[in-house]
Image (tube, rainbow, N blue to C red; front, top):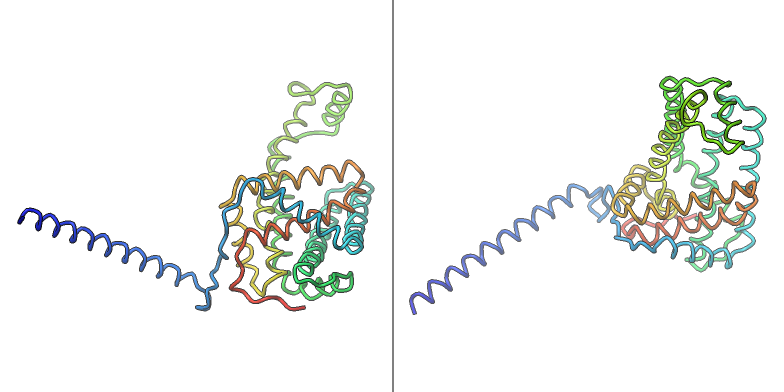
Length: 307
């Protein structure tokens, strides 16, 4: 009897110690959460992120297609604007050819493209709020958000400048000449890939440049995946939306990789059609980005942005 009582006492002591450890752990977590709170109102420096399934990007595209069917006129209107802007940039880049002028053109388009994306987010947002989206409303939405998105534009320009500098680094590591380029392209036209010997240095230059480009493209995707839709939806600062976007990509690596791959595929299709397909593709991707944000991020603690 005494032995049973002693055993029960040990069990109770162990249970009390376990409960105490749990309380201490919870207290530590609560303290950690408090340090992340911005104003004591549930808002953190990084918005809560949900775990996504691998088929989520397909669902976003399906919802985006429904938005296009619900607002075909305004969707096609913005799709046409983006297509024309892409054609102008491509034409001038082809005509001018010089890297400095091309960089200026791309940087200018870098400023404009996010604003066009915000216009598309306003359409999906309006449909969710059961409002009839119009071109005038989305244009007003863009105009109102220009001051708030200025920090994002600066980030984009910095990335562009770093990308251009990486091109110079690639040239320094693997010098190439117009003669080598000519040999490479002539061989490629004949179905031959020069990977060694004279002219192969241009292939090595392209591979290194592509590697640099992939790094900066990944960085851009991490920063923009859900940041601009959140900025368009909530009254929130730019640092929070950028960190939230990076966190969402890191937490859902494979799902976001699928989403990024789908974006690349659609953009490639648009280029192959001389940008004509962008009339539909750009609204589809814009609305898809909105639904990606809505499904991934819990931004309920931030106030709605009113236009």
